[in-house]
Amino acid sequence: MNRLTPWIPFICGICLGAGILLGTFVAPSMPDNGSMNSYDKIKAVLGYVEQNYVDTVNTTELVDLSIQEILQHLDPHSGYFTPAEVIEMNEPMQGNFQGVGVEYNIIQDTVVVVNVIRGGPAETAGVLTGDRLVAADGSSLVGDSATEKIVKRKLRGTSGSPVNVSVVRRGTQAVKQVKIIRGSVPIYSVEAAYMIEPGVGYIRLTRFAETSTAEFLKAADTLRQQGMTKLIFDLRGNGGGLLETAVDISDEFLTEGQMIVYTKGRVDGEEKIMATKKGSLEKMPVAVLIDENSASASEIVAGAIQDNDRGIIIGRRSFGKGLVQEQKNLSDGSAFRLTIARYYTPTGRSIQKPYGKGIRDYEQDEMRRFKSGELLHADSIHFPDSLKFKTPKGKVVYGGGGIMPDIFVPLDTSGNSQYLNDLYYHDVFTLWSLEFNQAEGQQWQKAGYDTFRSDFVITEKHVSDFNRITVSTGVKSDPAGQRQSDKLIRRYMKFIIPRVVFGDIGYFPAWNDEDTVVQAAADALNAK
Image 1 (tube, rainbow, N blue to C red):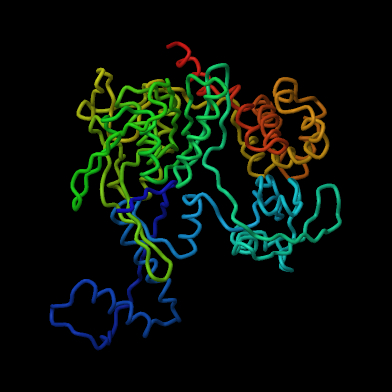
Image 2: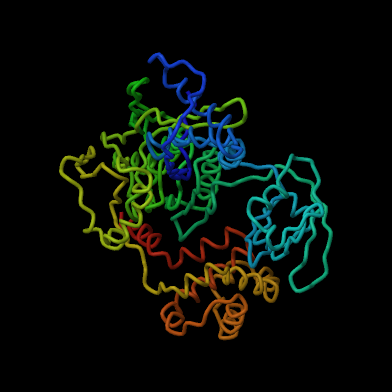
């Protein structure tokens, strides 16, 4: 049985209302002897709507909405997906997509390349970070045409097919025509893997895809060759993915016979999944990082590590998704996912948070956590004794909604302001990094990342350039907000540069140097 769990929960509510006009109703010709089953009833209603509704209706769209409403009425993680959504949803799980191989932001109605994927078709064709893509095959990608949907449709396509892209290089106004042959572009699950300090390695995993286990093992092997004896495994923001991948990665840490997870379903009953003897990291001390956006497969791994007293869980309470979905593909390319079981951690706790009040209430859980103070103070979280469980070594753990970390690290909200939010919204940091890359990128590339990490500082000229860009984007002046967020602004200015100049591997080491959760993990591992 092919079981999957969504890496990012696909949650949306559809509210159907109706106004009723009282008057004469002429019934369609259909049986009405009290024997009509539910399926015939739905078919009859849709048929009558199609034939008699005052305006022309899109029956296919109505059917899609009806299926979605039915499935989401069951639970927040069962759902229906159109053919286009299925393709977009499956690509990260498969570990690749067909396209040109660029990451971009749509800034001021313009498509701006913020990263050229290494080894991808765009890199081969000579596209550079900072380039503006203004047209594809003669169709505009500027203004109203600069939408996510249009850009994806124009740039993605069958491997081997060409696309002619009109490019404006940063600092010029000339339009350059670039022919890109689309290809298979890798989607990496391991965003970063490096030695955070002597003996302590760091691996960040963003999803549990088909290729994730191989990527993870390769990263771990490389770090062991560099002297890793302890591991920080970062699952923050990881919304999950394939159950099988979560099991395989958990197996690497656990000894043969230890339970990883078990599932209970109405049809399949109970299924226990145990660790095998293949684990390559069974003896390595590990700290797993989680937060409120770590869900599903991430929680399986964290739960298995915690319940087997295998490592330390650090951060904030995880999302709380303990439902297993099975995907069924339909003949028209659409698909639906249906919850067929609940999963339980080795101690027997279900970590699925309540969802009985509907999808909208479910979606508001993170905001409730913030308002209640849970993200800032561990003592704001209260679990009833009925949800208390104990690990083999006697550690108390709780079910009922996510994995509670062994070491709580609060969300740092100091320095936040509406002004900072406006800078994000207008992509000021991205624009600043692109301008910096054009002015100073080459010299820092020659110097190397280690030199940048140790020597680079934000100067007053950098701040002046940043403020000039801020004004050009239309962000309103807010001296009080600027003062309040000054430290954070300078921090983000510095840490976004490595991603543009050195790629993703440059971003995380710089950021983690001041990340309180990572620092807490390193301290905990070194204290052992």
